[in-house]
Image (cartoon, rainbow, N blue to C red; front, side):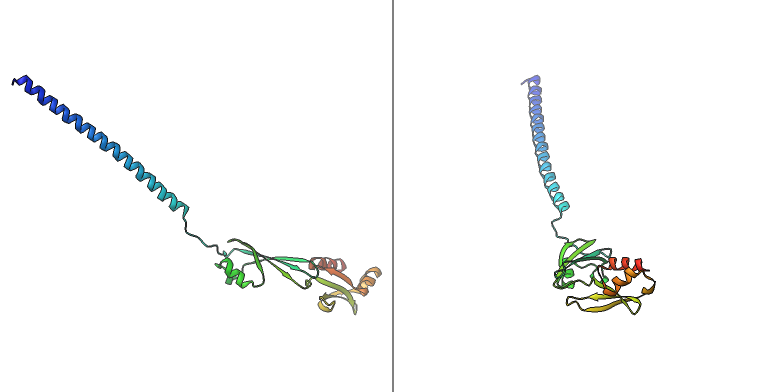
Length: 190
């Protein structure tokens, strides 16, 4: 064989080996990209699952929470509402613990900052008052469901300085509903 022919065979073999290696590397690189893509997709899914956090975090009352109480008195039909700061013993308590503490109330809303409670009472509210002249002084009575009167407040307002029309009303008794209305009436007499 001649030398030129041997060189041609060696070049052909080397070219064949080079092409084979190039094809193998291209295939390997392509397969590695697919594997990384699948792996990244899986990692993203795992990461997304971590972001979603499937664990349940229970709501608890914060130290800054307020409790809004609403009471419906069935016999008089009045609704009495008030708002208080959460008692220390209820801080960090969940809804069911608050429900146990306020037995007889229903929890209408529960969040970290606000708790709304409601209940119905088969009685009249404590906001029924009768204002009278007793021994020359305006006296306030609280009225219960049996129309019984109990002294609620004895003022220092003397009736002798009031107009005759007002003293006549006070001698018969003036019925007032609500503390706000009561205090407004008393301010008018001062």
